Amino acid sequence: AQSVTQPDIHITVSEGASLELRCNYSYGATPYLFWYVQSPGQGLQLLLKYFSGDTLVQGIKGFEAEFKRSQSSFNLRKPSVHWSDAAEYFCAVGERGGADGLTFGKGTHLIIQP
Amino acid sequence: KAGVTQTPRYLIKTRGQQVTLSCSPISGHRSVSWYQQTPGQGLQFLFEYFSETQRNKGNFPGRFSGRQFSNSRSEMNVSTLELGDSALYLCASWQGQKYNEQFFGPGTRLTVL
Image 1 (cartoon, rainbow over the protein chains, first blue to last red):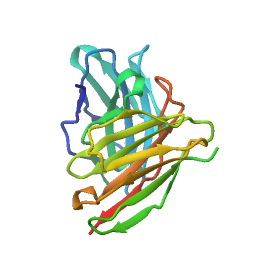
Image 2: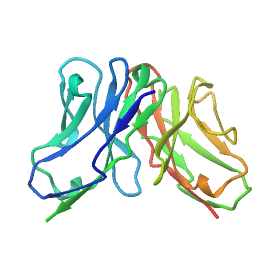
Image 3: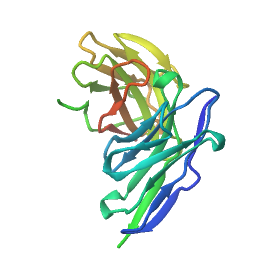
Image 4: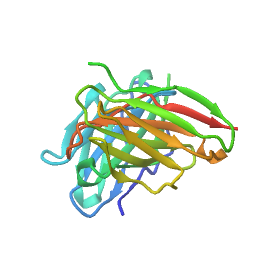
């Protein structure tokens, strides 16, 4: 069965500093990977997705992620965070291109220090 | 283009009651997926409907059911509510083909007392 691990429950970063959120997945075939962001009381917004091609994926709001098959990882990065980036971030994997539902990690809560 | 609409946004019920939640997908999208989000279990897939047919189902008891109408709007129903059903219920709207992006609604916050 597929699974997603986000090792960091909370991460605190100073405004303007760089950010990396970790995601490891377990899936037999080529995974369909996502990063979503959720602000308090809101639904999920897609930041970026990967299913083939260039392993470095650019997303919205200045985020990027790199797919590393050898490490089963899909880490999210941003060179300089803004206070508005404070939110919950979820990594997800979709079997059969998402057709069988998405399996989400437990999420990483990002706190931005002024 | 209007986004995904979920109604109601907040709901309070008591144990043993039943509840129906509604999701209106983005115009042109034929598939709706439902997810339950709780602090303990995180986000879990409930089921997915495509062109009025349930195509996939997660590991939830039969108390959780759903349906989809010809206009792609979807409802989910939970019968005999339990305290543990308190959660944020999210629906995702998408075209229904592999690798299509799934767009999430704001969710319905269900509290069971």
